[in-house]
Length: 189
Image (cartoon, rainbow, N blue to C red; front, top):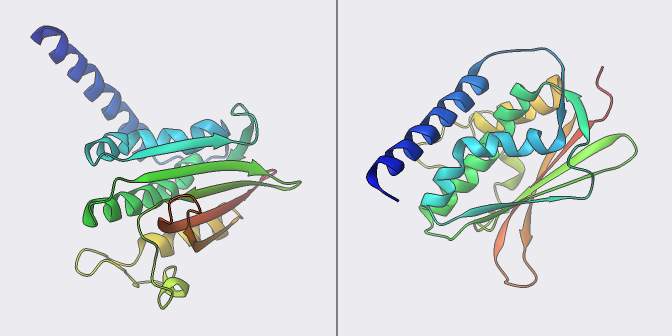
């Protein structure tokens, strides 16, 4: 690749990033039909380069068709899932871990279920039950303690779903991490 092509590729990438951020910050509170794939992958694209820069990846697995749609408030859900992705990324960076996040989508009769897991070491069992409380932070000086609290509020009060978090251990590698499980109703309106 010559220098001109490199510059053009960088500019094209920057333009796409600006469009993604613009779409993310446009505050629309209307119910929208969106594919399950876009619901979880579009917010990841906003920070995907940060994952790459820390030699980390995110894998998406669908137990339902990627084209399956859900009627929800995608901008509100973006805030939740971006917060979870960002928390994993912070842990990868702080602990110098080659991060592997996994997003698994399935459903039951009434709900879509989104499981987001990482290998970032997990959360102390002493504080795991407190992570959704307001102003509680696991980040010593940089955390406000509102991210996961707001995420829970958005999921439960605005999206009429549920969110939970548990520690996990990968049976193949013995790596520890967390798994967030988000349940969203199939029929919201």
